[in-house]
Image (cartoon, rainbow, N blue to C red):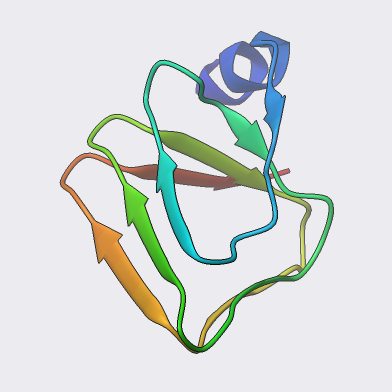
Length: 77
């Protein structure tokens, strides 16, 4: 049931994660199109309650800095 609900929510395309980026609960869920990289010299902050949806088999690679608040949902379909 949770999977069906998550797939039905309209999404925001996950932006390029360069520089200082804040992913907010209000603009989530965010859909990644595939493998995603946080580059060196970049900081990504994910607010509590934010939903990130990745295609099955894709990866999130952190080379820079990731600040993750509590209650984040990362979902693969």
